[in-house]
Length: 302
Image 1 (cartoon, rainbow, N blue to C red):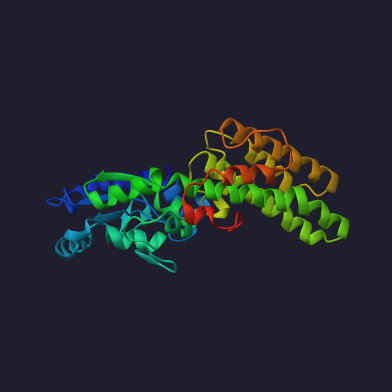
Image 2 (cartoon, rainbow, N blue to C red):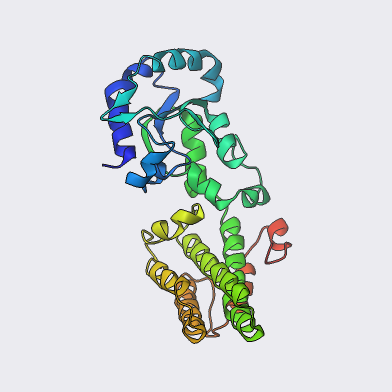
């Protein structure tokens, strides 16, 4: 059983009493930072910051009245559940569990307590933060502020923002892998060549997430999440093989095969056309689709 399943059981058994009388302004679930929120936890994950608990998100307008009551009720919950201790409310990275106003919760993750007002503001938010703000599971959904914000992060980000991110990832993949990797090898810069491959793999992975309209998570879960995507999941295995290959000729061949695989996905998605193998020209075709003036005026690598 994953921790998120145990936490939902914990809520079903005890949480209903905690939110009684406030069901119309409180949502509950497990969302945010931590492998358990992605459903990626295992035995190793239990060595820090993981436990039986849940988040309670209160509509901003009701928070000052409702939060003290919820905090008091949470004190009566057992310290252990199904062999797992209650999770620490605060960790080195900040507050993770307990009672939040909706604005406070999202501000702690993405830097905005309400929906960003412009595409440029959306673009400033790191992908891993958007992934953490939209992962997990909602056990009960009564806080309209929370629901609206979550739905916007999952489905409401402007299309131009995704297109801008995709064009940057594609051109960076071309720069790192198709252009600079072989040049580093010829220069005798072996360490730099590995950095080039790392950059290529990361940006190919980012591109696949964007094509699936998903937010790339923190790097250590990048391939785990990628293998679950609807389109391009097989590229994850190709990238992982490349990262443990050291023969320059094999690496250069793998870079071109992976680039061709991505190009097929881009073409099938209507983002580009043509058979040119070098991804940079396709990145510019993608960028040309951006309609927002502020985003279109940015450098393609910005």
